[in-house]
Length: 449
Ligand SMILES: *[C@@H]1O[C@H](CO)[C@@H](O)[C@H](O)[C@H]1NC(C)=O
Ligand SMILES: *[C@@H]1O[C@H](CO)[C@@H](O)[C@H](O)[C@H]1NC(C)=O
Ligand SMILES: *[C@@H]1O[C@H](CO)[C@@H](O)[C@H](O)[C@H]1NC(C)=O
Ligand SMILES: *[C@@H]1O[C@H](CO)[C@@H](O)[C@H](O)[C@H]1NC(C)=O
Ligand SMILES: *[C@@H]1O[C@H](CO)[C@@H](O)[C@H](O)[C@H]1NC(C)=O
Ligand SMILES: *[C@@H]1O[C@H](CO)[C@@H](O)[C@H](O)[C@H]1NC(C)=O
Image 1 (tube, helix red, strand yellow):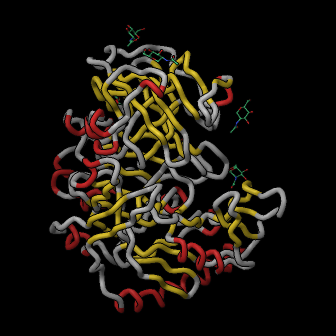
Image 2 (cartoon, rainbow, N blue to C red):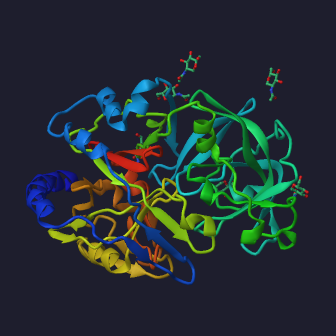
Image 3 (tube, rainbow, N blue to C red):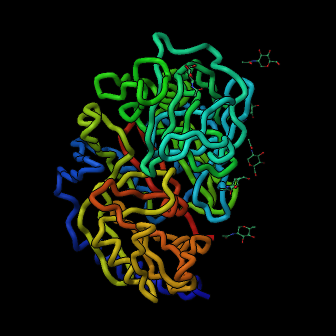
């Protein structure tokens, strides 16, 4: 019922949207300073020509199959045929995390797929599971799938290095670095530098055994020195050693062109990741392909990020919710490892107030909650002039219920001072192309189902 009512609204909103799109000017903001004590970061729009835009306009108005979609990726893509496809599976019925299988030597391991970090690791058989304070607790409490039973295929990195990473949600993973052949989607990356984690604070899904990080080298977290108790390790900037993460190695070993793309499917195992191209995803609306420059996101604690790409960051044109349009420009990270969308506080609040009944902020969860059968407003992020509607069935998490109020969590959260994030709630509605070679992102809307 809700969905049908909303679809009617969508058609009308799209008609209105056409005139809005023409009315406001494209971004003139070149630099963003979003420093905060917890997440100091800045973002700089990269100045580069966007030759691709012309060719994409050629596709407007015509529905084409996914083969012709590949043409938008440019000449380097057409020249080469090697593309590896891989299934992406949701780890929960509500599509809050996505996983894929990788082969490490002879072992097939289920790993979280994360475009918001760069390190690739598996939990090692004798790992130490700790609580938030670092005290040992039973391994099962970390919620991993089967731990990696083998060893580094080519031994440790010498001199020894270790990985130490703290994720945005507070989870911590550390362990020695070594080399292994990693096979994903039929493509084997030789001697990839990876971590076998032997100490973790982790809240897993009992299914995945580690994480595959697909962001840029500037976000890698290896440090000189062996893996030791954290208080004996040096995680200072001067001790950091950048290395080539999985996708970078895949490209530099000549295995695929510098592009990968992701189409995740809520509540199913039919999502697809394509290494080196575009997957044969169904339901693509190729009349609306948005092309955006990737921008440089500078993390103040990591000097390398001032001049190199780190996250997959774009600057959307704005947001539409109900009848309102907000065109303030902020950088957003494309992060398959984050479930919700994190927006600037005032916008998050305004969108949550458009739910009926309006969603209220519950500070215990740092999230907004509303009635579990609330009416959801149409919400779209505007990319390259096109509205990418979020599927209304994803906007209320019906299994995230506050036991006191019996309210359900919404998918639009406040990102404080940043970084702002387009998480799975957004990615579930589009084929997202990470065109690393062109330093561009492309988005193709998919039909709701
Ligand atoms: C991917 O999914 C398809 C369809 O569900 C299935 O036939 C295929 O075996 C899967 N491939 C892998 C490598 O799991
Ligand atoms: C997920 O799919 C299963 C089986 O197709 C269905 O029973 C379940 O209700 C779905 N869950 C959600 C949250 O849509
Ligand atoms: C993988 O298995 C094959 C056959 O059992 C064996 O010969 C090979 O050494 C194994 N490779 C690794 C890295 O364990
Ligand atoms: C993987 O490679 C083998 C041999 O090259 C090929 O037969 C098979 O179809 C490929 N599978 C996929 C999923 O690309
Ligand atoms: C994982 O399994 C443990 C032990 O069986 C259980 O307590 C926990 O709730 C499970 N976690 C998830 C996310 O399913
Ligand atoms: C982790 O691995 C390193 C290197 O092999 C070792 O020195 C350290 O004791 C291990 N830590 C744990 C908790 O197993």
